[in-house]
Length: 161
Image 1 (cartoon, rainbow, N blue to C red):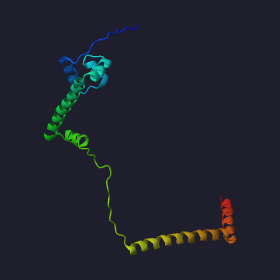
Image 2: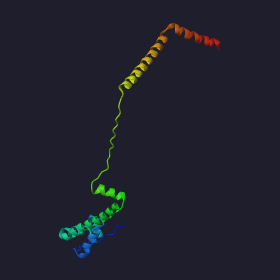
Image 3: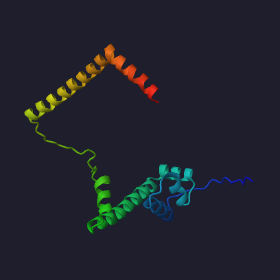
Image 4: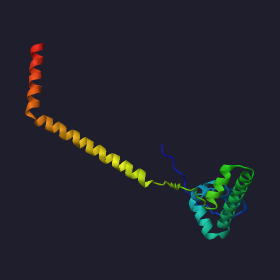
């Protein structure tokens, strides 16, 4: 069910009570429409008041400054008493400090030329040895005498069974 909200034009003045409510709402960090509603005004009333009377905007600015000052003071007290998280928050947010993201690694390693040559010679000998074994197998398969021996031993095996 929809409830209608009656529209009544109210005259808004920057009274001491209104300015105090604006100050208190701004001090705890409220902004815009939320600040207006917490101060007891509709958002359009608050905007109209700040446009017509600069003291209302000054009350908001003073409330923000005092709120930031109080919180900053408490944060600094905590950091000075040894709270590492508070100190880090101050460094990052007030002083723009950023932790290093990259680590540099410097490795100094000397290479022995004789050891490198010996390792290369070993690899060459391994390749030559593999090539020699491959050639020997190819020659054995191409030799008809060997094929005959392999075939006759296979036939002999069948007769032996």
